[in-house]
Length: 318
Image: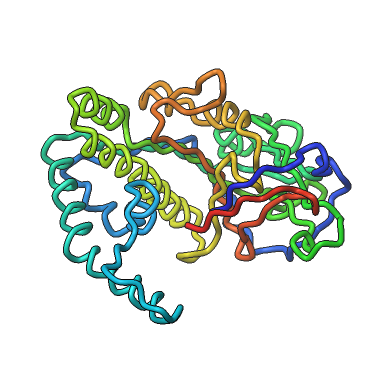
């Protein structure tokens, strides 16, 4: 993923729509009123294959390979770091993860849950119009189909830079309103559960800082694993091939406006009423190991940044 700071007023929000991607095969006209899934601690192993160990070990836990000696040649140093990292994975990190995973299953402090739904949508310029799925399933179309939300997405500026040559906007991945056809989009909110945050805090208050730090990092990684698990489920329900499409979370550079997460919770009210997920006044999720995403089914979907040529970037590769 990419994190960056950008001069948002220069992003040409609302610029004339430029169709920059080919029309994709639209899944069957389907919708769901919304579902909620909770992974029982005894079933946590469903998520273990989806766990991003590199992000967990390097980013959340902060581990780096340790070299006993520094070879002179750059190529030798790179090889030495690789070998040291592989030894650390086998001898220390993977065993520690497996033990923490067993503890989570036994003690129940990881309870990943999700609310998700598949909604009828159309693109209106640089905006995505989301309609009511219940009315759609009942046969409502056109003016009789109630609108549930409208998301405005920024478009890459026409500044001549190679980075922005596609002039991409997330709305481009959906059928336009003028086509008269309806498309579908998935929305999801996932969390590792409030008990994970509580457990991490209690451990730190008991001076078990290292374990509390690692519990917090594992919970954050599990939330991302749950997001991938739900995205796969949405793919199946949409009827698109495995691996097709991407999910985009608010706060990243294709959809930077985190205030739009209010609309996501409005679309998926069971996230609040059944899972206890809410937003702070600064539009941060509570519990903090929670993430929301738009699931795009288009085969050409890519991750991209919406930045002007003079934007300051700080790219972080996961």
